[in-house]
Length: 120
Image 1: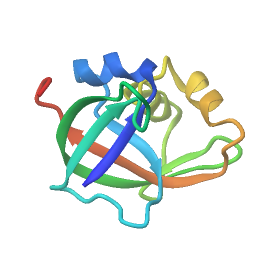
Image 2: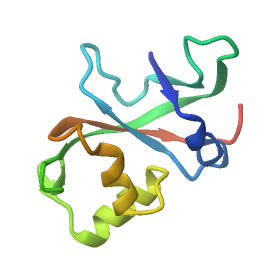
Image 3: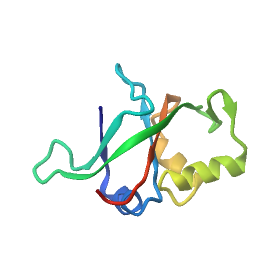
């Protein structure tokens, strides 16, 4: 059972089904396909809001290197694939995606995917 908190800027894309995954650091008890994911904004704050509960469909390993190379399940992404990943993750493109990760690289973690079935 994964609890995931999202910044307010990602909420419209999550609720509309445009953002169907999240990139997170490795956890002691990682989610696996079939688990229920609880998506929140403002978690652990007054006024926290449950966005939806969704089913985890896939978990992939992701690595983002200091020089911006992104690998998913040990396969390096092309420039176009990096751009698509950034957009699907709720960013305007690769540039804003990499700006978000500045100071946090290198990064190793997971892409946790879910099935969107509309607001629940």
